[in-house]
Image 1 (tube, rainbow, N blue to C red):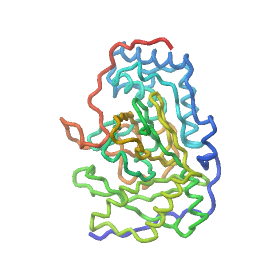
Image 2 (tube, one colour):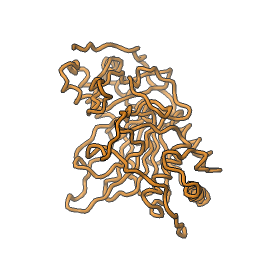
Image 3 (tube, helix red, strand yellow):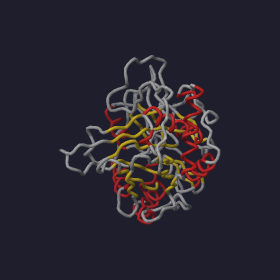
Image 4 (cartoon, rainbow, N blue to C red):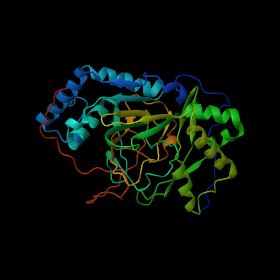
Length: 363
């Protein structure tokens, strides 16, 4: 079967404008993107966790009503608006994760996520909450990318040395840099591209996904970019070969998103909750620079979300992926029961129980 590389509507050749266009150098000294939780907001999180425990509600059945946040919910609505209509990310600081068990922290992230959107599956086994830990590629340089969902929530439980460093870049600012330096390469974003499903397709499905990399609605740019999956799809002989223009575009995007001018480095610490819109923000974990003989720890909890009020996107943007939860994107789960965790290195979560007693400590 020979695949033909088609085209989607072309992107207009004019710069993106608005708050989603930002430079890391300008934001690095600004506290506007960090939300520090007050003692009263932390008390609300404690109370919500106690409510879940009292009801005995299983994790995946917990809704926003089960996790009441009388005043913090309003701040989370503001954060959701910032993700969709502002700079595209918010860093919530000060969650005392040291007070909670791993299971309680998972319920906390799930409950907060319910106020922000609808969780979607992160792998073919249907796992909705992932664990990201230190891996064998910790010292490798990682290409800035987006995840296969509208929004991403990362709660840091452990991070030592440089392991908590995350790099962000504005997708719209990267687009503008490409437009300024190599405008002819923008046409590549409008072509059909093929993403490797990495073995997570449904039975009988194709092992790749054909999608555009970008969509623009006025000044709002939505970017979908994962160079690793784009290049690994080349192992299939039916997938069209990447041309020199595509590779030049990817090189320029990686270089620009990682440049000192555009990138914003955030050192995640335990208790930090990073929220970002995948359409607006590229992200990457910085390679480990510490002494390899030192002991390192790195543990994030991850949610993929569809916002309660998501932006309008053409159906082809997510290809044929769908969610059983009412969200969009993610990885369509198979109708199978898996007694063991997914492949090593994939985000996964073992079955979680409603947390036990939560013992507050003095602040």
